[in-house]
Length: 227
Image 1 (cartoon, one colour):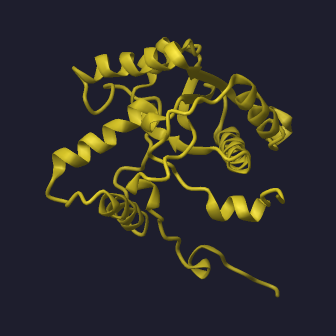
Image 2 (cartoon, helix red, strand yellow):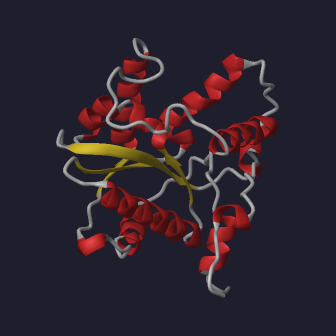
C-alpha cells in the first residue's frame, strides 16, 4: 500500500473530536516527535518544549483542571496570553462562528441549547477521549517569531500523525488554565503554555468527526504580483 503523501495528509487531516480507546504506545509518540522535531525554526532555536501524558498522568491533569473549573468554570483569572483578539472582528469572527455551527450541526445541537453546547466544549478538557495528550510550551523569553516556530512544529506533528494513521486535535482551550496545567504536568513556571494536543485513533462512527470546516477563497487570503 503506497504511503500517504503530504498532499493527502493536508487534505485529510481534521481536528478530531472523538476517539477510540485504542492505546497509543510511547514508541509511536516518540517516532512522531522525532519527525516533527525536524521542523524549521529561526536560528535553529528549537524553542519548543513538549510534555506527553497518558494513563494516570493524563487523568491527573484532567482531574486538576476539573477541580479548578469548580470555582473558575471559564478559565483562570489571569491568562498567559489571549487565545483570540478582543474584540474579534470580521472576517475572523464570522469564520469562527461558522466553524462552531458546522460542528454543532453534526451533533444536532441547536443554537438555543446552550447547556449542550457547553457540555460539548467541556470535552476539550478530557482530550476528547484521546488516550494521549501533549502540551506545547515555550520559554517566556521567546518572541512572536518563536511562537510561529511552535505552530510549524505543531503542524509537522499533526501531519506526521495523519501519515501514521493517527488522529489529532490542537487544543488552545487548555491555555485558559495555564497554571493548573503546568503544575499538574510539571511544566516550568518560566514557560508559557501554548496549547494541548489530543492524539489517538479516530472514532469513525462519531458524528462530530464528519464535520468539515470551509476555507476562504484563495484570492481572499493571497495576493499575487509580478507574474
